[in-house]
Image 1 (cartoon, rainbow, N blue to C red):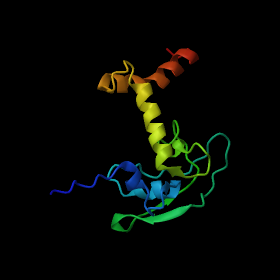
Image 2: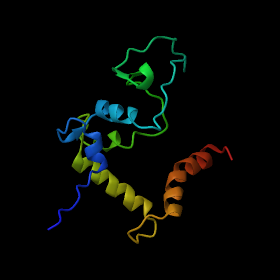
Image 3: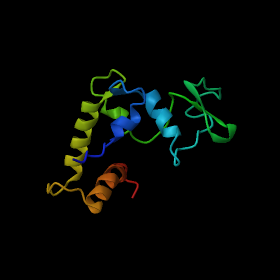
Length: 140
């Protein structure tokens, strides 16, 4: 009798300490191991803030002896797709929270409700916030 292969989902990849929840520190550490990780940004004055050194939450070793300093202060468009699943605001994402968020997104993206998200449906969902922004601001 053949045993079925073990499937590892995203949750299992992100939950580095295997305690049943994902923290932002675990997620950042996982993302730093990925080949297409974003590069750290220099601290620059913005919105009247004075230039200053950022105290890192973590210092991770990278290949070739480089280091990365992570900070909780991030400027980005939108919310983190994993940590935004934290519905009870305990700074941890459980498997159930991540699954519920994934199902909500799938239902929203599946415009014709046929149980499949096509490339066109996905692109339309990704572009919707930008289209709403341009319409409401009168940019175009």
